[in-house]
Image 1 (cartoon, one colour):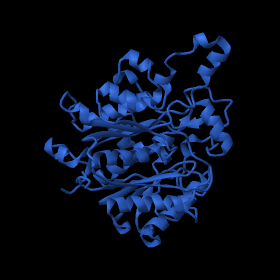
Image 2 (cartoon, rainbow, N blue to C red):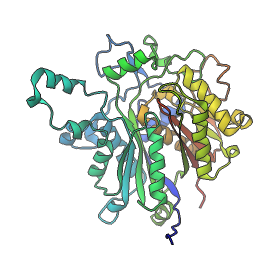
Image 3 (tube, one colour):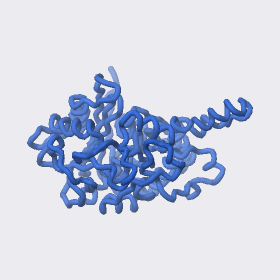
Image 4 (tube, rainbow, N blue to C red):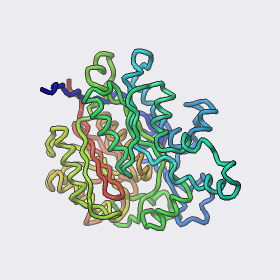
Length: 416
C-alpha cells in the first residue's frame, strides 16, 4: 500500500519587493497606500523612435547593495531584482540560512529572463564575429538565472525552479512552491516573480501588437485599469518575493506570520493566442478556492490582473462574476495595482502577491489610480483613486497570461 503523508500548511513569513514605486518593501507599501504613480518616460534607452516611449522603470536601483561588483556585472537585471527582493524577504522573515538549514530551502521564480535583450549580442556575432561573443550569455541572460542566482548567493540547496507561463508566471510559481511545502519537499521556499524587459524590442513588438498604451504625452495617467478610456497596458519591471514555510517550522522558530498561502488554481483558455477568455479565467479562480477549501462568499478582496487593456479588464470583470457569483462580486472590493506599477509580465504575480498579503496584513486596500470615467462593462467596485480601510480575512490575486495561461492564488489570515 502507498504511504500516506500529511500535507503541510504553508505560511508566509517574509516579503521583499523592488518596484517602480519603491525599491524596498516599506517603500513599495507606502507607494501602494498613497496611490503613487511609477510610470514615466523611458530612461534606460533613447525611446524617441519607438512607438511606445513610457514604462514603469525601477529607479535608482543599486545592485551592489545586494551582491559584489563582479557578480553584478555577470547578472542580468531581472536576476539582480530577484536577488535583491529575496534578500529583503529573508531578512524580513528573520530566516537564518546556515549549514543546518540550507538544504531545506528552495527557490521558485517566474520570469522571462533576458529574452527581449538578446539583440545587442546578436549584433556582436554578425558584425564582429563569433570570437567576440560573450561566453557568459547563458549565465547572465538565461531564464533559469533568477532562481539560480538567488540560490547561489544565499547558498541554499533545496529545489530550484524557473517558471514561464507568460503573465501568469509569478502566480503559477506560487502554486509550485505551495506544493513543495505541502509534500515536504522543502521546509522553506523563496517564491515570486522577476522581470526586466523594458527594452526597445519589447516596446516595439508589444506596441505594434496593440497591447501597450500609446499615451506617450501623459505617462502619469496612461495606466488606467477599468476606466472607459483605457488604451493598453504599461510595461513594468522589478521583483516580488515571498518566504513561505511549513507551518510547524515557522512556529518552531517563532517566526512572525503574515498569513497563509491557502490555495492556487490554474487553467488554460484553449481559445486564442492573444484574446482572453472569461470562462478560462473564472476556472482558475474556482480551482484556487477549491484548493484552499474556501467558499466564494468568504473572499473579501481581490487584487485583479487589471492590465488596463480594453479586452482584459472587460473579460476579467465577467470572469470574477462567474467565479464568485455576481451578487458577491458586487459586494467585494477589487483593485489593480498595475495602475501604479505597470505590468511586470512574468513578474507581475510576484509583486501583486506581496501587495495582496500586505493588504490583508494592514487592513488597507490600495486604490486603482487614474480611474475617471466608469465603463459600464467594468461595473465592480475597483476602489477608485483612494485607499480604503477594511477588515480582510481572505484575499485573492489573479494573473492571466497572454496566450491563455491563467493562475489565481488565495491567501487567508493565519489561525493556528
